[in-house]
Length: 400
Image (tube, rainbow, N blue to C red):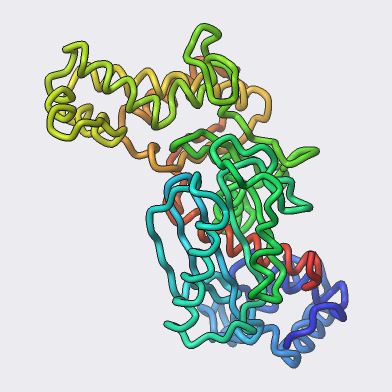
């Protein structure tokens, strides 16, 4: 077993720097940590001796001897990453540098409750471990994203709107029945933001990640750290009002952007257009399948259907209206769009951009980029692994 509790401050800084840099040379490490060469080299030597760092091969030479790349050692163990969405479950095993060893994805209904979902998580972890010949004791940290408000310190969900039966249920204690590893649970969009933060090596310090699916949520990165707010509810933008006279939301209020523009709203508007005779294409889908999905509205839009185009443009405009408030307030350099609805068609992203730029202050958008999250569907699972490793380092391996 690797010991974390007797790491010196310098050794801990080196581990954290190498993790966030995804591999550096000794010279680069000294620059990033602001250590002297001798101090950096001493910490590296101690960590290599302890089996916590590996030299993984020479980098490209800039003249003279080629420097060795330093990475977190696989001797540390294996990370378990869990990304739970409203309708999906992803589970992966990773090395400390977030290389995926095994991955499984399947549909899931978060409304079926913690017993059903977490029992399946445990089964999948066993299957992945068996596939990779990994013992239970080799799992040294677990990270998980969940689609609801999470009080991060206790890892408990608090009044999750789409997760009946989950409030007060200790995911951490459930996982601890099988794994003696620290487990960290956070809101799913915060975890996606953590994934993008790791991808950028913390070089983009202020950005937001917006997930658009069954609901709408936002992960905030401020000064290179996930910002969770006083109680863990920062970024719950899905319940910002965009129409006081709009549909009633499951939260009890009217006109929340989630009920007006998320996946179910797009499907609802598509069904209404089909029934009203506004779209023959959607009417054919409804007659054939009995239901219309957001993806089918997107397909109709890409095929030139006017009613579908209007639906997609309205949804994007309303989301952009909400995001303009966030941009004016926070002034991020990037807005990354992700989630199952995000790639519904080019008109959707265009409508979001147009609405944000139209409603935001000029200074707030001077350097603003709005784009799809580069990690795409992988953001949640990579972020869960990054969360597990980051918090384990920060807490020196202690159980929370």
